[in-house]
Image (spheres, rainbow, N blue to C red):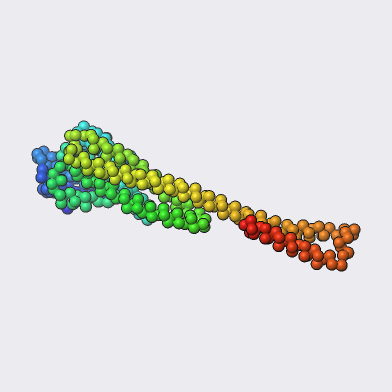
Length: 334
């Protein structure tokens, strides 16, 4: 697949601009200036892929495809919510991409312009190339002959499928954290990991929930832009998005339960410590009481003159301590 590197403010954006025939076969690569002429050819459609374009590239795309200025402005800012908007006879779709990096999710954005005879994808941030999705389409020209709506399905399916390994990785991390929690040893870092994982799941749900609505609209609406033959494919992507969203919601509930269990175990451990401290304190109370009683040294205390007073006091003290130790041990306070 050919590409045209374009330098902009020290950055390079990669452009793939290809014309496909009515039979779904790849015809040729073209430059941005040739898009307008290619769109006029009946039965053909153009698929353009851009990564982090500058204003000059976006201006050319706007001029060639007749894109709405508000949609182009959104595509340039790259901090949009997941949404679908209609501009005349074209659709503007914003979806969030994700990939794992150092046990955390890095999110990016993809902005898609769908017309009757074109598809434009603009990637920003953490996003894998759609070259593999394009190659998959080109290996099935009979499906690509359905037009740009099938190309749109391929891109959206590619994006949603890359959430699956992230969900699997999160499930593995959740199981590891559960083992640490049930191990009985309190670690503050475990709570931090639980919170971070829950935060990532919330972000994932904020991405997946509106994507379900987008898929529903593509299944039921826009007859001039979405071929009826492609609608079942969008429904399949919607099912995948729903499953991912439900899995994320379930893991959030499990994380909340894990945090509650961790706090409960910490409370139990603290109670055990306090019980042991109280038990030893009670055990030491007997000798302290006897020692303080005879430490008063009053002359009229008859025990002070007893011949065997000292060993008797020691024996009584030891006996009381032994009885208290047995009782506290049975009560599991020691």
